[in-house]
Image (cartoon, rainbow, N blue to C red; front, side):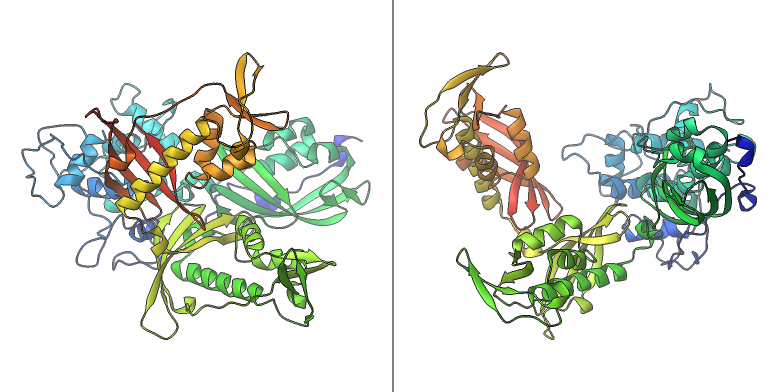
Length: 618
């Protein structure tokens, strides 16, 4: 078939495609930042993250040049910087009693600001100076090769300016001008900082020029050069487009619209009419088609297709517009779904019960009488991982083709509909909230922490919900856990106990010995260590200690180990606490020698398991 028989009509795609209609407006906390203001989303984001609070008069003062003091304070909050306890840094113009002395020290120690005799908190910044600060603060990388019409490559700040632009935190104006000497306003800095912290604010992350849009390139290559089509896709899976090119008689694109953006991804819906040689060819069918393309930015002005589907992948700009009220509604609905499942669902149900492995079961009602129905129902509010966990923890089984559950009821007085919700941790894929939940109609409240995760193609889902009291851990309890964890480590290194002999063998030039009965399988070892260590650290220990399975039995390199560290007599100090992560400094006696070792430990709270050791190092 001749190429001339194919046609691509893209009359709606002319010009530059710089879509910005998906953005959300901020319900601003500041009198001088109205909905629709060019930096309203970024300012609201920083306010919600408690990085900025504006001025006492209720204004953000958007046009006012930002000062060195204000930048330091915002960066300290954004990056969670803290000064060292015994810092020797002093400033001639800032006394140690100054309200923000610690913040000034922290940014200097972090290498963001130079170490000078004066801090000069009221100094303002040019764009060039701001580029240097942000590149250092966020450790940005780039080639430093951009052509800038108003910044010479010999300029002291050329590299930083180029890197800032390559990372899309700053954009060039007309004629490739950066305006390096222009003063940076508070609104300018809010935008720069929001972009550095959250990729969903990057200007070229979504606003894709037509000549760079891989969707447009795809349908152009269908006509001109199908062999190049795989290069447009991230995973080199071209969803069959290259192979169906010769099956198309005529193709007409009628519209291309941006419909969603999230986590650095942009989604386009494309409508087209196709005249095929057969009824179907790949994802295309004869006549009218609507396809959804998920696009990601791989490099500076370089985009690729991640996925193609007949149904949308994303639900608009959830990462920015997902409010506390939406979070509360989702969490409340998830708990209602949980209790509905525990209660057996709705509709007709059999009163028949049966016993299996010593447990009495009852069948689920019609709405949830199969595993597929139950998981689909819970999946409306929970992550897939949490759905699987709930299915296992609640003991569901299938018997005679019907879903059943242990014969027990439950309920809760917690009123999530009336809870107050505060965002405490945020990214484009994971959000954590602190909830104050009323206990029925009483004045009592229960503090809980919820973790939400974004599920591609579905939206935000509840991944965990725990009582904050479970996070409570005294120093004595932490030290006891660390002591027991170390004993468990040495117990594993020594090979366990019980039946068996330390039979040895060689493999790949190493001598191994089999583990004893208590730890003679990978499952036994992981379960044992999992009582003290996080799953991630169990994986690390398993790998670092060189365990292998040989002839169905677990074995380890033939070497012994021991430790004179006396954890029971150690001193422990809490140095960091974020609720579900705690860090400690330990001073541990080395036997009875009078010598001590200094160590740092990090403990993580594992949902439904409790506190576990995630690291212990010198």
